[in-house]
Image 1 (cartoon, rainbow over the protein chains, first blue to last red):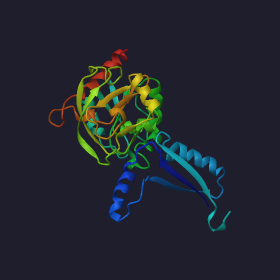
Image 2 (cartoon, chains in turn cyan, yellow):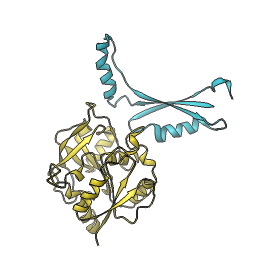
Image 3 (cartoon, chains in turn cyan, red):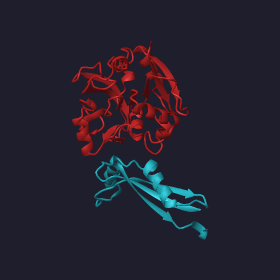
Image 4 (spheres, rainbow over the protein chains, first blue to last red):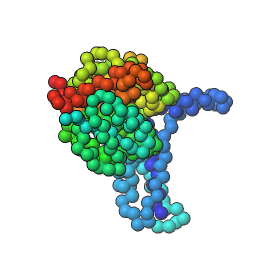
Length: 86
Length: 227
């Protein structure tokens, strides 16, 4: 089973209020030396064993659905097959 | 003959019944449309209502874009059919690339639920032609992801082409340039976050300013876009 991981992050110029909220909570944890927190999404996709063109298909999925290119960037990484299965 | 305005129900739509009532009170015939049915039954215009289509999975409006009915709505919009999207409907229009930009989490992270005073910036759309440009209206706003964002070039273009349709007088969510609603180039597709369909009766709304939306599209259907 081939696994592809897509990471989706808000573009740097888009305010991330969730990250700001987490940053604001850190001093209460006793952590005072963090400059910035940004929150994104990690999407794990498992393809069928006989799937072809994983990277190409994953890029279509990421570009057309998982990320909104107006506000987000994405990266696609293909993980090596688990358990040594081809 | 009475104009027929289709109102789409997605799984998770909430304001479809209110939209139908507003359409009726505005003098048109509401027609129920279903997300999983490509047919739009010969309607003259389409209203995409508020709510949480598909549970807001992934991003608000992201899944609705792939529904059967949206294929037909996109094609009809390209042919000039008036389409309005309110709240989640606006998010669906942006995700469907019928309108530029995106709607993201309110800057203060809180769900905002109160009447919003807006300035109507243009009467040159299918849905605002009966409003005086510069006039003020009050529509209820109720959203957690209503902050309009786009890059500076897109914002400049919207301003330059007179496509900012509604602007907040008191920005409730951090929207860029106080934008509450925009139109496409042809003026037949309009999206806004506040809800005109909740402002049609004194008993339940903060104003009856929303009736002008249906009135405008009726005028548009009989006379065309004001130029």
